[in-house]
Length: 117
Image 1 (tube, rainbow, N blue to C red):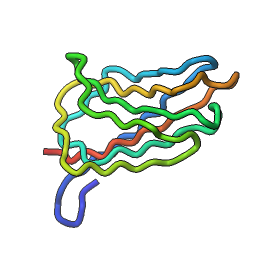
Image 2: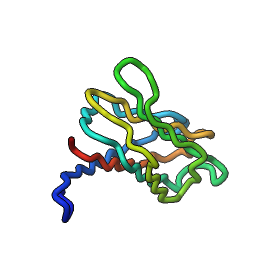
Image 3: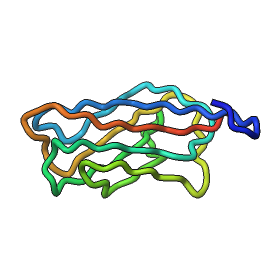
């Protein structure tokens, strides 16, 4: 997508499926290049109503380059970063819940808005 100012932006949505009794799920080897400006998260209602989620983006060396915690279940949370995070290479996007899932599968959607540089 190109803005009216000619800046190329890229939005990628990852759907992470949680099985029953699973607290952490990851989507590995995602290639990102550019400046991360916003992370939108849609957490499922299928978890314990008091559960919270944490979103992590981890680089190939195992360093966490982005984290956002205390995301309530069944909510859409936009997180516009005050300063961009430079991304280049392969990353793992991880969702960790504070409580186990219910007996059904559920999906967390994570959308990354990246300015191509």
